[in-house]
Length: 259
Ligand SMILES: NC(=O)c1ccc[n+]([C@@H]2O[C@H](COP(=O)([O-])OP(=O)(O)OC[C@H]3O[C@@H](n4cnc5c(N)ncnc54)[C@H](O)[C@@H]3O)[C@@H](O)[C@H]2O)c1
Image (cartoon, rainbow, N blue to C red; front, side):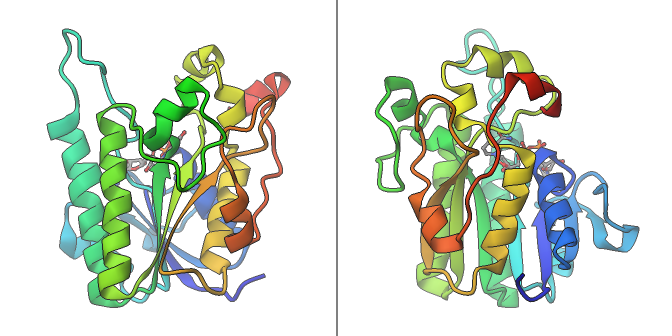
């Protein structure tokens, strides 16, 4: 059990954010949620409703925190490849996934918050998953899927720069697939869904381990997924070694109601 700390969780009202908040609270941390929606499971005084693009509100929420778990984002492309539809790059991905992470890293730098955990995605190496060039490691070259994945490549690069230039500990985690409401069918039709599945409980335990790890390298990339079913897609060695974290769950169709 790590020492209780004050932790800012952005995107705390979302699918993974709620799981991270629940696990951090269960481990005794003083959790501050930050989301455009109220955060379930936190008292109103600890559930800040605001946008990442509001630098003042973000700094107020982050003041006094020992770490930031940064999950707030637009979590996927809309209508991509474009076809006859527009994309969501300028109206959603740029403010939430490009400007937002910049504001997070600036807040951490100014307020001297020593550790930032950034939610990246397996989509930054999505091309390897599709071609079967697996298991991917943190050293695998980028093969981003669409525009959302490009914003997460930026996120990782940003973390690397702030670690080097400003002495922060930054951990970028390429998360597996924790399906949101409405993604059930897409998940089932995916050729590798069960092998990249990330259960909410494993996600919560991952973020608690990342917050509690006594020391981290200045910058590292790790993968986080539950246990694969048929084929190893993500090499979890670096998460095991750095965080002493091990996934416990595995996708089971019979437990699909846990989606
Ligand atoms: N769920 C997955 O399978 C998965 C996989 C890989 C990576 N991720 C990443 O994990 C993180 C969480 O994803 P999720 O599935 O929980 O998504 P989600 O949509 O359920 O949660 C995202 C939350 O961020 C909030 N948010 C968005 N823009 C914001 C802003 N500008 N200011 C404040 N709050 C804002 C939303 O209100 C929402 O509650 C995201 O960064 C996503 O890219 C998710």
